[in-house]
Structures are given as structure tokens and as C-alpha cells.
Length: 124
Image 1 (cartoon, helix red, strand yellow):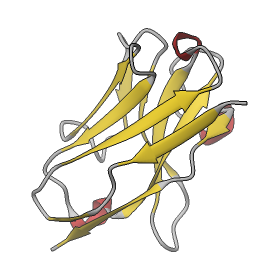
Image 2 (tube, helix red, strand yellow; image 1 turned 120 degrees about the horizontal axis):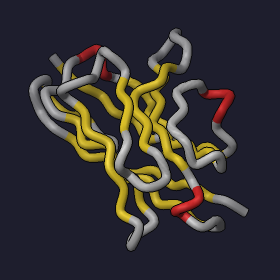
Image 3 (tube, helix red, strand yellow; image 1 turned 120 degrees about the vertical axis):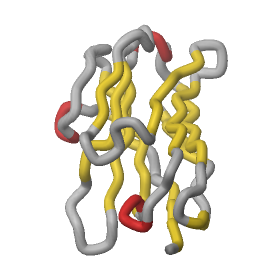
Image 4 (spheres, one colour; image 1 turned 135 degrees about the vertical axis):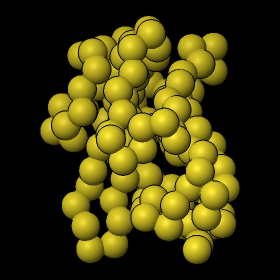
């Protein structure tokens, strides 16, 4: 059974940085493309970033481009989301997701597995 476990979310001041981690188990990590999504209170879940199976190709939402970086470590079965220059509007529960397609995708319905989420709160 595939499991995704996120960590790293916490309260941070605007302008600060956080690194989220997502550890994957139960499936060959290099078979999976990975993504990060977020959901703020009262809003729909939205795409944040994605990375293909190899890690050579990435894609970002316009709202985070230039501030967030997605990466993966095949030795640790972990995908990361480095978040810099955080803004109050980045406050949300952040979810890690995996797709067995291995390819870069940005729609939630294209992902097969999801983590439980980690809360990021950015204070102004």
C-alpha cells in the first residue's frame, strides 16, 4: 500500500521560508511523478508544483513561480517543497500527491495517492 507522509508545516512570518517534506513508501519511488497541492479555508484545492519521475522536469503555479522549488531525493524516497518569500496568502494545508504515470501533471484527478496534509500558516 502506497503511503505519503508530509511534514514541515508550521507558523512562519511573512517573508520567511519553510521546507516541506513528503516521504513515500509502498511503491518504487522512481515510478512516480509527484506533486504538491494546497487548500486554504473556504477555497478549493489548488495545484502548487509538480516534478516528473526523474526530477529533471518541474512545473509551478504562477502564484508560486520564483518563490517555491520542488525537488526529489531518490535515495530517501522523498519529495521536497522549498518555500521562500512566504506571503499570508500562502496559508493553507499542503498536500503531497503521487501519480503512477510518472509524467508531469497538474490536475488533482490525475493523481493516484495523497498524503494527509501539513498546515502552513504565514502571519503578516
